[in-house]
Length: 208
View (tube, rainbow, N blue to C red):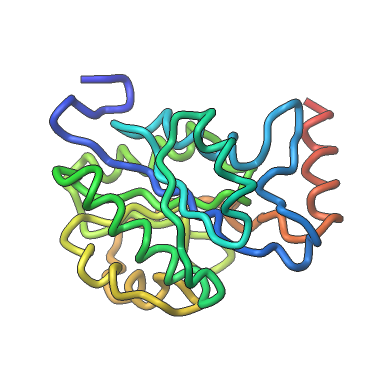
């Protein structure tokens, strides 16, 4: 068994959602770099550290631009032609790819490419909760709500595979929310949507 808790015949593939247009940023924010590493590469690296296999990256608006980063970091690519429909459609594409690449997966770990403050250690804490008794889901709790990062048991794949809404998996999360499967994750409240937020994050990294 590896340090992340997974043995060779049991994996929890990570799905990195990176399909958005980043309209408020005005460019492909997934490729913004800090300390020589892009947001996308950072998400792939963190995902790989807690998964039993190579992460899957769901692309959309900037598919061609992101492909070199995905290949360089030994991840799988899954293109969402309906990326404009929102996060739900990207989750569905990612789940279908998981079923193709990892048919024995116990579940899927959904993370976002634009939540750079979430550490590998925090992601591992989600895995630890999931490994305890394989609940239907393990989700982030922040600012009075719930969302990604989120682990979904394979039993939920049929429902996740039908998503197409802008709100992503929120309805499913609330449907299966039970005590003990929500991980406090204040850093999930911060995502990089604007140039100001990016500069705020870069400044915080330079202080370290």
